[in-house]
Length: 99
Image 1 (cartoon, rainbow, N blue to C red):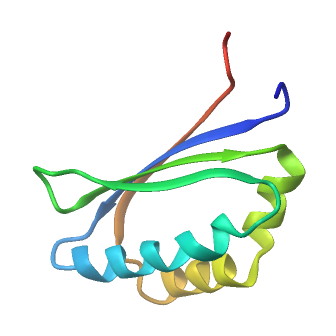
Image 2 (cartoon, rainbow, N blue to C red):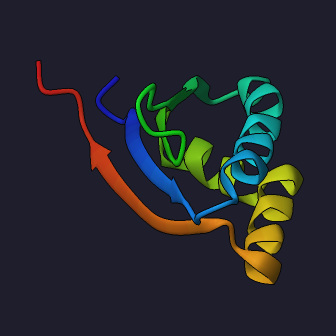
Image 3 (spheres, one colour):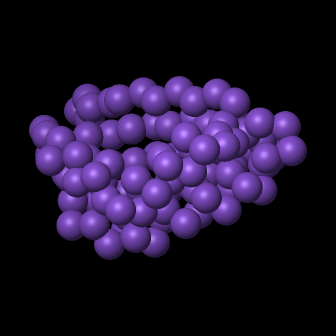
């Protein structure tokens, strides 16, 4: 468990792009759950602000996270963002289990 990668990803959709972003983020969930090194990949949405999303992610190790980032569906998401990014702001924090 010492090598476990924990990420907390906060995303804010651009005005009017909330549902576009929701659709794209949801498309990542099922295939990511199938990844061998994925321990948790949970999408949350702020109940008071539809523009705000948060992923809680756990991967077995750095190799598992690297495989996720290299997966075709994640690359497709990155390509989508390059063409017409629905994200106004993104913050990624990396954590480790403390106890």
